[in-house]
Image (cartoon, rainbow over all chains, first blue to last red):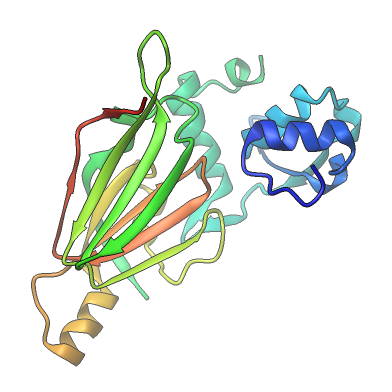
Length: 95
Length: 137
Protein backbone atom coordinates (compact mmCIF):
# COMPACT_ATOMS: atom_id res chain seq x y z
CA UNK A 1 0.00 0.00 0.00
CA UNK A 2 2.84 2.39 0.83
CA UNK A 3 3.65 4.52 -2.19
CA UNK A 4 0.35 3.59 -3.83
CA UNK A 5 -2.06 6.34 -4.86
CA UNK A 6 -5.30 6.61 -2.90
CA UNK A 7 -8.06 7.15 -5.42
CA UNK A 8 -11.13 5.47 -4.00
CA UNK A 9 -12.95 5.08 -0.70
CA UNK A 10 -11.73 1.49 -0.57
CA UNK A 11 -8.13 2.62 -1.08
CA UNK A 12 -8.44 5.00 1.86
CA UNK A 13 -10.15 2.35 3.98
CA UNK A 14 -7.28 -0.06 3.32
CA UNK A 15 -4.68 2.61 4.07
CA UNK A 16 -6.38 3.41 7.38
CA UNK A 17 -6.61 -0.28 8.31
CA UNK A 18 -2.93 -0.79 7.57
CA UNK A 19 -1.89 2.34 9.44
CA UNK A 20 -0.35 3.89 6.34
CA UNK A 21 -2.73 6.80 6.84
CA UNK A 22 -3.65 7.99 10.33
CA UNK A 23 -7.14 9.28 11.18
CA UNK A 24 -5.56 12.65 12.00
CA UNK A 25 -4.51 12.85 8.34
CA UNK A 26 -8.10 12.57 7.16
CA UNK A 27 -9.76 15.90 8.00
CA UNK A 28 -13.53 15.75 8.05
CA UNK A 29 -15.15 19.02 7.05
CA UNK A 30 -18.44 19.63 8.79
CA UNK A 31 -20.97 22.41 9.29
CA UNK A 32 -23.39 22.98 12.12
CA UNK A 33 -27.03 22.97 11.02
CA UNK A 34 -29.83 23.22 13.56
CA UNK A 35 -27.28 22.58 16.28
CA UNK A 36 -26.09 19.34 14.69
CA UNK A 37 -22.75 18.62 13.05
CA UNK A 38 -23.20 17.44 9.46
CA UNK A 39 -20.21 16.13 7.51
CA UNK A 40 -19.44 17.65 4.13
CA UNK A 41 -16.95 15.15 2.70
CA UNK A 42 -18.88 11.96 3.31
CA UNK A 43 -16.54 9.72 1.35
CA UNK A 44 -13.84 10.31 3.95
CA UNK A 45 -16.24 9.45 6.77
CA UNK A 46 -17.31 6.32 4.90
CA UNK A 47 -13.67 5.20 4.78
CA UNK A 48 -13.25 5.89 8.51
CA UNK A 49 -16.39 3.90 9.31
CA UNK A 50 -15.38 1.02 7.05
CA UNK A 51 -11.94 0.95 8.69
CA UNK A 52 -13.58 0.73 12.14
CA UNK A 53 -11.95 3.93 13.34
CA UNK A 54 -13.78 5.10 16.49
CA UNK A 55 -15.35 8.54 16.23
CA UNK A 56 -13.22 9.72 19.15
CA UNK A 57 -10.24 9.55 16.76
CA UNK A 58 -11.89 11.44 13.89
CA UNK A 59 -10.39 14.82 13.06
CA UNK A 60 -13.24 17.26 12.44
CA UNK A 61 -12.81 20.71 10.94
CA UNK A 62 -15.61 23.23 11.44
CA UNK A 63 -16.36 24.87 8.08
CA UNK A 64 -19.59 26.57 9.12
CA UNK A 65 -19.94 29.84 7.24
CA UNK A 66 -16.66 29.32 5.35
CA UNK A 67 -16.35 29.72 1.60
CA UNK A 68 -15.98 26.41 -0.24
CA UNK A 69 -15.62 27.76 -3.77
CA UNK A 70 -16.42 31.02 -5.49
CA UNK A 71 -19.29 32.53 -3.47
CA UNK A 72 -20.56 29.14 -2.30
CA UNK A 73 -20.29 28.23 1.38
CA UNK A 74 -19.80 24.78 2.86
CA UNK A 75 -23.23 25.25 4.43
CA UNK A 76 -24.77 25.51 0.96
CA UNK A 77 -22.97 22.39 -0.21
CA UNK A 78 -24.17 20.38 2.78
CA UNK A 79 -27.74 21.68 2.51
CA UNK A 80 -27.64 20.84 -1.18
CA UNK A 81 -26.70 17.24 -0.36
CA UNK A 82 -29.32 17.06 2.38
CA UNK A 83 -32.00 18.22 -0.03
CA UNK A 84 -30.83 15.82 -2.70
CA UNK A 85 -30.54 12.69 -0.58
CA UNK A 86 -32.49 13.20 2.64
CA UNK A 87 -35.33 15.58 1.82
CA UNK A 88 -33.46 18.34 3.61
CA UNK A 89 -33.56 16.50 6.95
CA UNK A 90 -30.51 16.61 9.21
CA UNK A 91 -31.96 13.83 11.35
CA UNK A 92 -32.31 11.45 8.39
CA UNK A 93 -28.75 12.18 7.32
CA UNK A 94 -27.37 11.38 10.77
CA UNK A 95 -29.04 7.96 10.97
CA UNK B 1 -13.53 37.69 -12.65
CA UNK B 2 -17.23 38.21 -12.33
CA UNK B 3 -19.89 35.80 -13.56
CA UNK B 4 -23.62 36.21 -13.35
CA UNK B 5 -26.99 34.88 -14.43
CA UNK B 6 -26.26 31.12 -14.50
CA UNK B 7 -28.74 29.22 -16.65
CA UNK B 8 -29.14 25.47 -16.37
CA UNK B 9 -28.08 23.51 -19.45
CA UNK B 10 -28.86 20.19 -17.80
CA UNK B 11 -28.99 18.68 -14.35
CA UNK B 12 -26.40 16.00 -13.58
CA UNK B 13 -28.78 14.59 -10.97
CA UNK B 14 -30.94 13.36 -13.84
CA UNK B 15 -28.52 10.47 -14.26
CA UNK B 16 -26.04 10.44 -11.36
CA UNK B 17 -26.80 8.19 -8.36
CA UNK B 18 -27.10 9.69 -4.88
CA UNK B 19 -23.41 9.22 -4.11
CA UNK B 20 -22.42 10.95 -7.33
CA UNK B 21 -19.87 10.10 -9.95
CA UNK B 22 -17.10 7.54 -9.45
CA UNK B 23 -14.49 9.30 -11.57
CA UNK B 24 -14.09 11.45 -14.64
CA UNK B 25 -11.76 11.84 -17.58
CA UNK B 26 -10.95 14.74 -19.90
CA UNK B 27 -9.58 14.64 -23.43
CA UNK B 28 -8.91 17.57 -25.76
CA UNK B 29 -8.51 16.92 -29.47
CA UNK B 30 -9.39 18.74 -32.69
CA UNK B 31 -10.92 21.65 -30.79
CA UNK B 32 -13.30 19.43 -28.84
CA UNK B 33 -13.05 18.95 -25.10
CA UNK B 34 -14.60 15.63 -24.12
CA UNK B 35 -15.53 15.13 -20.50
CA UNK B 36 -16.37 11.55 -19.52
CA UNK B 37 -18.33 11.05 -16.32
CA UNK B 38 -18.29 7.53 -14.90
CA UNK B 39 -20.90 6.32 -12.43
CA UNK B 40 -23.04 3.36 -11.42
CA UNK B 41 -26.11 2.95 -13.59
CA UNK B 42 -29.50 3.01 -11.94
CA UNK B 43 -30.36 -0.62 -12.68
CA UNK B 44 -30.55 -3.78 -10.60
CA UNK B 45 -26.90 -4.61 -11.19
CA UNK B 46 -25.50 -1.09 -10.67
CA UNK B 47 -23.35 -1.61 -13.72
CA UNK B 48 -20.62 0.93 -14.50
CA UNK B 49 -21.81 3.52 -16.97
CA UNK B 50 -20.53 6.61 -18.71
CA UNK B 51 -21.87 9.79 -20.18
CA UNK B 52 -19.76 12.08 -22.33
CA UNK B 53 -20.15 15.84 -22.50
CA UNK B 54 -18.56 17.29 -25.62
CA UNK B 55 -17.67 20.98 -25.65
CA UNK B 56 -17.39 22.01 -29.27
CA UNK B 57 -14.82 24.54 -30.45
CA UNK B 58 -13.44 24.75 -26.93
CA UNK B 59 -11.03 27.63 -26.52
CA UNK B 60 -10.14 27.56 -22.82
CA UNK B 61 -10.80 25.19 -19.99
CA UNK B 62 -9.90 25.17 -16.31
CA UNK B 63 -10.00 22.33 -13.83
CA UNK B 64 -9.58 23.22 -10.17
CA UNK B 65 -10.12 21.42 -6.87
CA UNK B 66 -13.62 21.68 -5.45
CA UNK B 67 -13.89 22.84 -2.71
CA UNK B 68 -10.95 25.11 -3.40
CA UNK B 69 -9.85 28.48 -4.70
CA UNK B 70 -11.82 29.95 -7.59
CA UNK B 71 -10.69 32.50 -10.15
CA UNK B 72 -14.31 33.48 -10.57
CA UNK B 73 -16.94 35.14 -8.45
CA UNK B 74 -20.63 34.59 -9.04
CA UNK B 75 -22.83 36.10 -6.32
CA UNK B 76 -25.85 34.43 -7.97
CA UNK B 77 -24.54 31.09 -6.68
CA UNK B 78 -25.68 32.09 -3.20
CA UNK B 79 -29.30 31.84 -4.20
CA UNK B 80 -29.54 29.42 -7.07
CA UNK B 81 -30.05 25.66 -6.68
CA UNK B 82 -27.74 24.92 -9.59
CA UNK B 83 -24.86 23.29 -7.75
CA UNK B 84 -25.55 19.93 -9.44
CA UNK B 85 -26.06 21.36 -12.93
CA UNK B 86 -24.02 22.19 -15.95
CA UNK B 87 -24.71 25.89 -16.36
CA UNK B 88 -24.06 28.57 -18.92
CA UNK B 89 -23.46 32.08 -17.62
CA UNK B 90 -25.44 34.99 -19.04
CA UNK B 91 -22.49 37.22 -18.27
CA UNK B 92 -18.79 36.34 -18.03
CA UNK B 93 -15.93 38.82 -17.63
CA UNK B 94 -13.75 36.26 -19.34
CA UNK B 95 -15.92 36.28 -22.46
CA UNK B 96 -15.85 40.09 -22.43
CA UNK B 97 -12.05 40.09 -22.24
CA UNK B 98 -11.81 37.53 -25.01
CA UNK B 99 -14.10 39.58 -27.22
CA UNK B 100 -12.09 42.77 -26.60
CA UNK B 101 -8.72 41.16 -27.31
CA UNK B 102 -9.53 38.87 -30.23
CA UNK B 103 -12.93 40.01 -31.40
CA UNK B 104 -14.16 36.46 -31.06
CA UNK B 105 -17.91 36.03 -30.78
CA UNK B 106 -20.27 33.13 -30.32
CA UNK B 107 -18.51 31.64 -27.31
CA UNK B 108 -20.20 30.61 -24.09
CA UNK B 109 -18.91 30.13 -20.57
CA UNK B 110 -19.90 26.76 -19.09
CA UNK B 111 -19.34 25.45 -15.56
CA UNK B 112 -19.98 22.24 -13.67
CA UNK B 113 -19.02 20.83 -10.31
CA UNK B 114 -18.23 17.15 -9.84
CA UNK B 115 -18.87 16.94 -6.11
CA UNK B 116 -17.67 13.40 -5.45
CA UNK B 117 -14.56 13.61 -7.60
CA UNK B 118 -13.91 17.04 -6.09
CA UNK B 119 -13.35 19.19 -9.16
CA UNK B 120 -14.81 22.33 -10.69
CA UNK B 121 -14.59 22.68 -14.46
CA UNK B 122 -15.01 25.89 -16.44
CA UNK B 123 -15.05 25.75 -20.22
CA UNK B 124 -15.18 28.47 -22.86
CA UNK B 125 -16.64 26.87 -25.98
CA UNK B 126 -19.17 27.52 -28.70
CA UNK B 127 -21.63 24.80 -27.70
CA UNK B 128 -21.93 21.55 -25.84
CA UNK B 129 -23.78 18.26 -26.15
CA UNK B 130 -24.25 15.26 -23.90
CA UNK B 131 -24.34 11.64 -24.96
CA UNK B 132 -26.81 9.01 -23.89
CA UNK B 133 -25.83 6.60 -21.16
CA UNK B 134 -23.33 3.98 -22.24
CA UNK B 135 -22.95 0.85 -20.14
CA UNK B 136 -19.37 -0.28 -19.79
CA UNK B 137 -18.71 -3.99 -19.97
